Image (cartoon, rainbow, N blue to C red; front, side):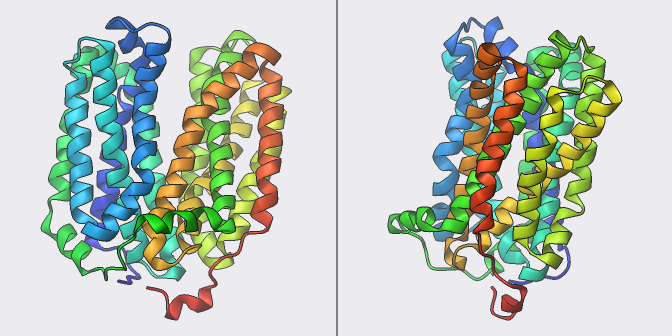
Length: 397
């Protein structure tokens, strides 16, 4: 089903993505403190935080099989319901094991909505406008994360953890109500069904060199973003550079501004010049821009670097799912999107672990050097990627 404009269903899916990620991010930044408050120590704190991401990894690729067999609507609905149930359960847990279960329910719900909705959107739009449509959707998804993380401290301070989880759960219920709009179900059923996938299709994902190159670039990008820009750099800025929390917030805000700019430009640019140049730009420019962080200490200069990093990392995130989906046959798009999302989940899991270890052993500068080296390695396979040309649009979908 091809659409050149933004349909009502597309707009609603974007709103649902914003609400769902905003809801999830209202408490996540302070979850380790909550886990400690209910008795978690050491590894259990880490498991409480990681349970969400581990559950996501388990269902990212299977979500493609689920949508190919049962369509898009019911998996999206189930995913939002699981997210709502897990979120409300968080408010009533009394020990770390219960918290891990609640986080797992949220994690299972995420790919059923996000991976499936992304696949649906990819099939709603023709090749020549797919990049901009997915760029906006991805941007709104991550925008919800940024917005929720920004106000999380105020919410928990004002409402406490119980109130924060209840508010988050109410937002999830609103998302469920929106997905029940009949227009979404009608349009999802109108999209032509592809051949149902089976387990034998999985090896094809890992033999596709273009898809693997995209996944490697995505994995490294999230290792750098979650491991350095969100984890070790704030520790370095506060402990070594003696920056205040307000200054660090301004720096992170500058990156958010750069990312917003990427949302509204990178998808459109990729529709005009291709996916490969945008991917290569994102990886190469991030590789270069992360190095000055080892030398710069001034607030304004650092804000400028983070603004540019928002643009460069945003280029990789926004174009990744589109490029991944177009690297495979139409019937395999769901699994391709799931594979892409699995790698950014893994980057989000391993990034903080790898970079905090490097910070402790070698110091902050080496986290920047290692990031640049990893990005340089990921750039090489991106040179060998191939993409679907715009001239193929007549036969696409």
